[in-house]
Length: 469
Ligand SMILES: *Cc1c(COP(=O)(O)O)cnc(C)c1O
Image 1 (cartoon, rainbow, N blue to C red):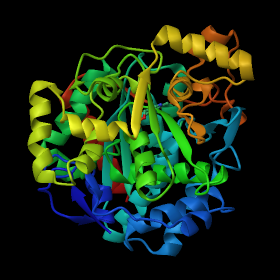
Image 2 (cartoon, rainbow, N blue to C red):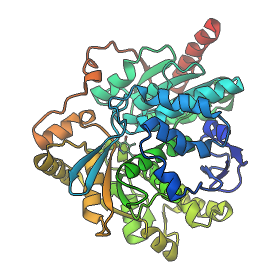
Image 3 (tube, helix red, strand yellow):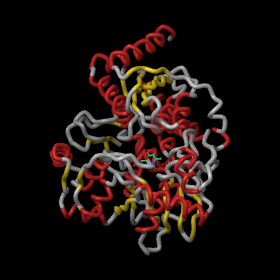
Image 4 (cartoon, rainbow, N blue to C red):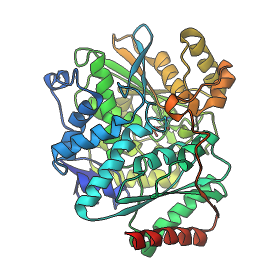
């Protein structure tokens, strides 16, 4: 298995190089050269496997022999060993043939753990095999930073620096980052905004000497390995509900289009998924595209579901690649035009073909609160402001085609306690393994929004490392 760029010009790479590269050198995203295609018999053979065993089977063809089978199985088993539920990704029935797939039993309570716990270990394995180290640098407004820190803590070949805007992330989110006691984890509270944090990260990457000296890297949502690992939970849920002998419709709350693109990957591999329904908050660029056929960027507004507050869904480029005949040379100028103009149609025929698979609808903040309350009254289940958007989209748009509906729940309600309490009158509690989060000791440094100070800080921390190594 090799990987090609959606823009057609970057070198074709094996999995281990794609893992470390992240973005392709031509500005595109890496995708598999071909999709593995499984028979119904192969899908049936997944029945009865543990979540870790099933994940190993699903991702093996994408690794393409760059990691030996036994090592891969060990990595995946270890990644999910600490999850808070023995099923790892349990299904909960919400009504007749309606299910929620709970992807919030990882260390930081969001679905991002499901990919990042594996990806952090893959990084460590591949780096050690190549005799390299990396320094991961990232900015976070909440969820991604904690999931990345948990994924990288104690990994020998990795240091991780996460910048968050001081005083502007929730207490739960900050403590999930700053109470990790590992020596390779560096938290920086920046006296500024999230944009200041992002600008400083960009500036570090744009300084070629600095970037090369510390071998800077990122684990952001455009990394192919994250999508690959996420394909597994679509298989796990579908097989548990009777696939391939039953069709399953999935509903997914969407920001960068990464999660739902993994569902598309599962469909390409042969899973019977008639429809992928996406839920948007008020930042609804994708819903507007699928309903109206025009993709247009507008300014971001803050919502109750901050992890979906995006202007552009970067992973959508991977879907476009498929619908442009997997021809990067054709897609590259289209993406450049979109970037320059902020609006584009991608053609009517293409839009109609996409709509046979994808549909979307949106829920604003008032609707989000109302629906959290309704579902809590009807079922006793508390859904977080992201997960409810997926479930409601699925309920509204599912076809009467006999398929079961699975709504992907992307965060634990206790990650967004204020919104959930406001809607239900009940404050959701943290699960037992995080119950002492507010007693744990915090560790972070405060820096001004100043790139010189930031580079000095990173340099100082890394210098100590080299001496002690
Ligand atoms: C990141 C995130 C999303 C959006 O996922 P994408 O892959 O970007 O579509 C949705 N919900 C939660 C809780 C998240 O953390």
